Image 1: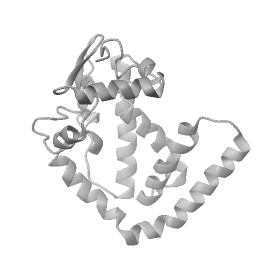
Image 2 (image 1 turned 90 degrees about the horizontal axis):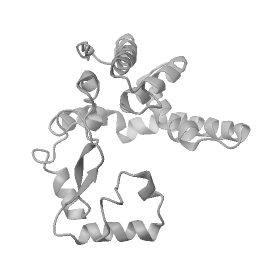
Image 3 (image 1 turned 45 degrees about the vertical axis):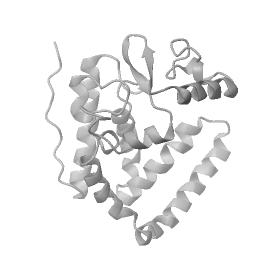
Length: 221
């Protein structure tokens, strides 16, 4: 089996290797007797579950394969930002299922049909802007604004607030990413508090929900 220590699955170096080398690594992982431990420098490491049957079992068993206390990432976020990390993306059943049922009400065939026109207009606008802009970052100019602007439209958020919502969403989701949040713990807490408060105030104005913001967490001194 190729050395997991030398080819960490979380390393960008691994993902830049030729496809056949990556395929060989995953074939070796699937042939192992069980999940293979993958060490990560300065972090706890993780077990790689690569067989379909094992992945399916893990998804059905949150009591064992839990995202608690907050995240589905390899490393839980620092305690000072944990109150902002319990999104629908990062929680297990039964809480995940409850929130999913609420959100799914906005995605019935009839309601989806209503927003089809808005999606078409937005897609054309993005393509037109790409034509004028030329070479660009696909994630920044297409993959990110497309779904977030559609969600904003479905929620009734005014177009003037789209930029603030997209920025706040990136900061809240990208906890620990230096592109969005300062690596300093105190600054991270301040930024997340400000962004979450912005979204909460906007939702309150729209009378879309009655979710209360999480308690303010004191920064460590």
